Image (cartoon, rainbow, N blue to C red; front, side, top):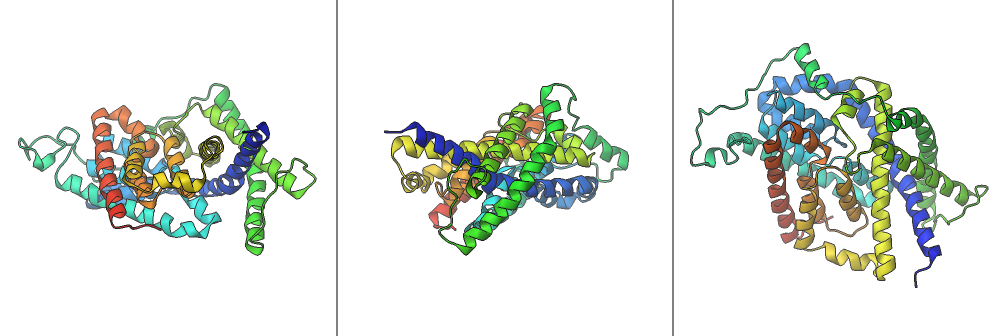
Length: 403
């Protein structure tokens, strides 16, 4: 018989752990990588346009950067004819979107995840580069999805021109094409005025999260108790987690983007302002927090009401069905569903091959701007990311490669 106390404790623990075990570390990483994008955005555009032969490599490197910002920037570049279609495919295959932060956060708190995190990123990067060059080598385009393999292939057919040597004006146009957020509505006001409070609570949470890692290393049996008395250590830390997650949910709701966080407008604002970089980092982390907490609740309530254990759930995540399902989830645009899939791996509910299949298949939030600019290109892009996802995932499963 499930009691209301058990349900309430699951909610409290999920909110606390989502903030202290994931959010605070994700926030630090998001801010760092967002800052890197802010100070180097112009050079990225200039470099990739000036090196046509290396575009799939550079595109994959931009995609492998945690978050969706690097991948999103590539979409208007393709629309303007600055990069090849293979570069777009390489970028989308390599990107893990915001789900990458969940994996890296798991590695920070548990060293056993370091090897699989490195492995999945390397595999995604290599497959992205290889498939990108394959697409360009076969001269595959959205209008000619089989390229040279097509029976009616014509090498003299029109194709997208690539502008190799741009100038600062053209470079500026790429960022202008990303658009800007509308400075209206309660959501915009709440996010742009409340982000400082969120950062204060998150900074405090990061301090205690690091202390918790130290205490756990010193005492293997150390564990937080559920306490609501703020005068005790357990109670104070619990309240930090509850307040931090609550603030994150508020910021998440204010964005009005349910399965995606990064938008062209928010990326465009971030690339022009350090303040907007701070704001966007808060909103992106809040988005991750909401979906990680959702994953925690789904897993915990599934076990509570079904009577199953994590070991029982993991039995369904080891076979070929899990690989196919993980790749299929990757077809869904946006980072929300992908975060749930990645969190399942950190909970040992799905296998490493399934993790890799999802990582390769998913396109993060970058598919949305491509969908707006070139619907056919976006549809074929999902095909080009799903095929290698299934191939690699099944091969890893067949050869029993895991971490």
